[in-house]
Amino acid sequence: MEKITVDLGSRSYPVWIGSGILEEIGRYLSGEEVCVVTDPTVEARFGGAVLGSIERAGKKGRLIVVPEGERSKDFSRLMEVYDALVSFGADRSTELVALGGGVIGDLGGFSAATFMRGIPLVQVPTTLLSQVDSSVGGKTAVNHPRGKNLIGVFYQPRLVFIDIDTLSSLPQGEFLSGLAEVIKYGIVLGEDLFYLLEQKRDLILKRDRPSLTAIVSRSVEIKADVVAKDEREAGLRSVLNFGHTLGHAIENLVGYGAIRHGEAVAKGMAMSTLISERMGLISEGDKKRIMGLLAAYGYDLVLPAFSRQEYAAAIAADKKAVGDEINFVLTGGIGRFILKKISVLDILDFIEH
Ligand code: NAD
Ligand code: GLY
Image: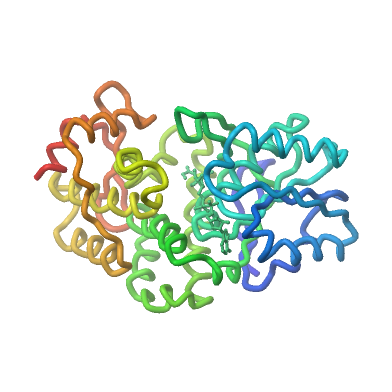
């Protein structure tokens, strides 16, 4: 098992990564009572192993199951989690385990952060996106009817426990959606990771365990480093939004749910790469490698057809917009980022060429 530390002083925590480790989770928990928040698909696959492990460790385990999907990141589901915690007699020593993808991680994390002003949280991510991104770094949230993740807090877990084997049952679309975030780390912060993604493409797409372990570990290392330097996103952490400004705009235009997050981010990363090249920030060779890698993993990089006005409104609606200028993440070559304020009009000009 590999251990990566998220270094946040007294709030530092380990991220354990391994293969076939889920049944060991009980030994890593500290509460006598553990409430496992999950969804039906994840419960059916991994609920028994996790509860069994909790019981073998001499603890009492309870399940709180909410419907799967983005819709569960709302106040009525949050209230159901609180109701279950109250009816189980949970107190400040009760540990909450978020077992599932990013939806469960965000909802469970927000519940743990707010119940009795905060109970210990353990993230056990089971999708590629949640393993490499959402489980690490302490962002928790539910949605408001008028916007995603509008209600949330930073609340760091006590530990993150990643079993790579859980990825074997992940539908291909979910797998590729998470992989877009891995590619993102490679483009802006990890030349070595980018190279690994190029070299091991076939093995990664076959979900070869050592290859998956290597890319998940490196992604977590990169994210942990960014979070340790800029927990509250005052600057550096915003580079993790590479491809996301345009990605969010595309999700917004085609309608949430009509396209997977990672597919939209892949289009956003391609466009941001082309903009970087036109601004003279990146060589033709690096541009070709980035576009080649995105194509090699099968992403469709064509932008959906919407008018200039529609793109402008969708980009400006992004919460990172400041006046008509937005903080935009560009690449300065593989493994390097450049943060720049650019106007929405400039982005549109680039998109149109
Ligand atoms: P998700 O949580 O909706 O999970 C996707 C689907 O996969 C679900 O239907 C789930 O039941 C199923 N599933 C989970 N694990 C499985 C497994 N091992 N095998 C088979 N099926 C499995 O989606 P996601 O992509 O993991 O997360 C998306 C959410 O993450 C969004 O709400 C987004 O806002 C959030 N997010 C948060 C952060 C953060 O920093 N907090 C970062 C990125 C994304
Ligand atoms: N998903 C971006 C972040 O955690 O900051």
